[in-house]
Image 1: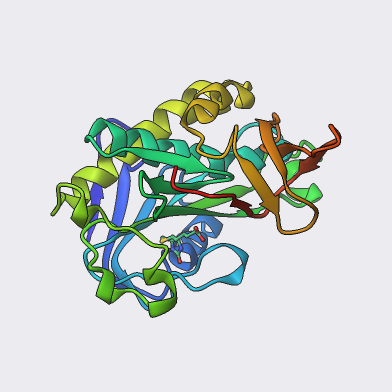
Image 2: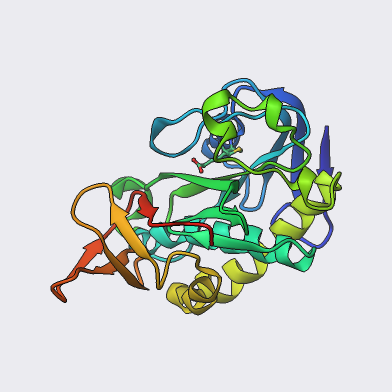
Length: 261
Ligand code: BTN
């Protein structure tokens, strides 16, 4: 089913499928065929949902699984901030609905008990030199967002059950379509204000305020433990070691010591 939003923001065109292997693939194909910015592919369930670092993403019925096409008009060097912006959009939308959500670096959305309730995956296609005329301003990003809305823990794989949370336990069942509308609005506002205006790092103050990582001891996957002290304009995490030396973790995951938020 296809529907059109006359407001013309993100989600102006929504392709709603009962099932998809992954909305990332559906959206990528549409983007490559010239579908405009803001088009959303939303599936009630995914048979091959994927997460970051090649991990599988359990996507049973009851959750919110969607991807949105973005065509940023800022140089690709700033595109690494988009997943963080996705995490902020989900967290503020949940908080507006009374759910105590925060963002674990880089873009996992956690509940107050430390369980992960949502994740963001961005896949981009940079322009070729010939397409962009060397400007670097074409190409697209597919941003996929997954939220365990009305998902029962037993519908999740045993290995994620211990770390995943569901909104079902937080005032559920929730209106899945309404939540997607809220997230798209929150994302669209920030994207327009901070990203398309050419000042992509400005939203980082909001990110810092929502962070459940900053001020905590973290262990990067490589390297010794330290205190998470800041997030740079690129989205990289700055970690201060016991000897006072600061290291920059550009991407990946960190373990947060003694995490209960
Ligand atoms: C993560 O590893 O935290 C990112 C998870 C992203 C999941 C979403 S669900 C909608 C979209 N389709 C996918 O296959 N993945 C993303």
